[in-house]
Length: 263
Length: 324
Ligand SMILES: Cc1cc2nc3c(=O)[nH]c(=O)nc-3n(C[C@H](O)[C@H](O)[C@H](O)COP(=O)(O)OP(=O)(O)OC[C@H]3O[C@@H](n4cnc5c(N)ncnc54)[C@H](O)[C@@H]3O)c2cc1C
Ligand SMILES: Nc1ncnc2c1ncn2[C@@H]1O[C@H](COP(=O)(O)O)[C@@H](O)[C@H]1O
Image 1 (cartoon, rainbow over the protein chains, first blue to last red):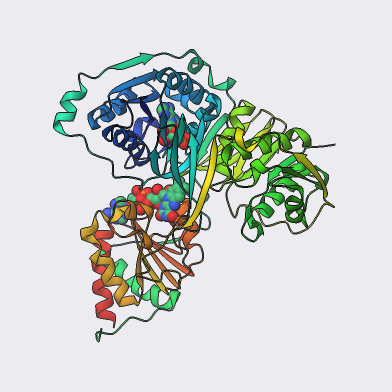
Image 2 (image 1 turned 135 degrees about the vertical axis):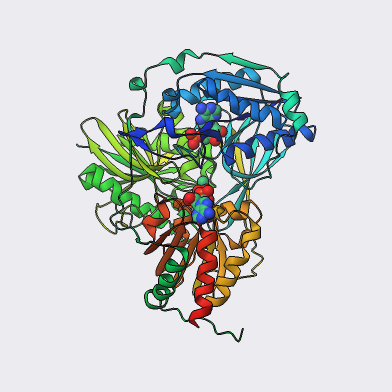
């Protein structure tokens, strides 16, 4: 039986203060964690292992030293081992070299199935899983909402537009980018946290992630605030004041009448 | 000849999908000359491709044909794009940012040796290459990125460009697909409609009060039920809310949920991710309550309240009680 691998990225916590420093994000104002997509990717491989369909589960991340935190979270959830591709956070801006390094690490683990998140909550490329599949010549499906692993194929459901779902059959090995809602990710138990301390994490420094960003395929990445010229008129004040103004504007702006007490 | 831009045509049940015409407009602008616009049209055979090609505003339509392309598969479509790209000598490849385009793009990109830029909301060509604008950090920022390599591959968000209706006297060429069905690693078994429980009729609602993750938990949703009652509307939700099981899936609004077009849309604790916004673009009057002044939802609203929904909503319910 072969193992399963989940790819996880340490991303800024949703509740961080997102500020710009020049034309890039002010990293000093960010807290970090794991995204909902990646939690679901990890849960998916744990479920395969718990069902006895894969031998064990490994989690792989590329990122700076602090990114070992997300591996620890995964191990505490129940993953068996971790691989940390250590690199500067700036080296993560271009998905291609990241995918190349991840592909090398994944190939060494010889899995039946690899899961990734559909997109990251930071740069939202939605590509790393597909690039890994493309580089390895493995099967690929994105927006996966169900996984059924069989002997030498995996059947996956893909979310399409307009409330349609595609059912696809993929040869193994396959890389699957999971959509949120595919499962309910488990939390780490206290026992899981204790056990995680004894689980192995291998550190690798991939030479390809030492490449200066300028040599990469995506260059000159900058960030700016979206143009808000067409944005909302903002109501200010105490909740009661705002509420009264809202009532007025809902009547006049939207032409809505309020339902009487009779109901 | 100047720049050559290749567009992947997407088809739906009725023919070539609307978004293809938006991509053709993008391609015409990038190519600067209608003679530089090419289409890759994967199809089972030449007849099917030629029928679908009819009327497409492009210089040349490359029907990549073979039984391997009778149905969508990521590896089959990636191959079709590569074949068409070589035949067209394209400098740039545009795919729709749809479940077909974003699925195919990384496989095509892996073979070109550079990442694609996904979810483009703006494109411009410079001496250095293609500059792409896209949303990042859940829509809080616009990211701009340069793709210096050729071909530059990008997926383009729906609604970014107007649809191109005419232009270019298309010639049609068949490229026999290089891969056979047995070469493909993935196979489409079926496409299903997801049944909705149909408890509420979101698309028909005149007022939609929508819950986001910022509502904090299912225990706070009665605030919205009360408001919806008073306004004669229904309660909808963001995906974060339905994924978490606070409300059933059929309440979800957005690209993978319902499309609504009410007179009034009240977004409560919703950040305004693009996949949510596409489901409520048709609303006539949008009110957003969010504690983050930088939340993207304010860019899509007429009226905003920066504040805690759990304080504003009780006050609003009270004010409505008084007003009627
Ligand atoms: C392929 C694909 C399809 C998708 N389809 C859909 C779809 O159909 N529909 C959809 O909605 N999403 C969809 N998504 C997900 C989408 O990208 C977002 O993740 C989702 O819309 C976020 O939901 P949210 O705004 O409720 O949560 P969040 O993004 O977490 O936002 C919560 C907001 O609440 C605010 N907040 C927090 N506390 C309070 C408070 N007390 N008072 C007021 N405000 C508060 C925060 O400032 C924040 O802005 C899809 C994603 C993908 C990749
Ligand atoms: N640095 C990384 N390390 C490990 N996995 C990653 C990394 N970046 C992206 N991934 C995986 O690829 C998915 C999609 O990322 P992206 O293409 O950046 O949107 C993520 O949800 C992860 O599963």
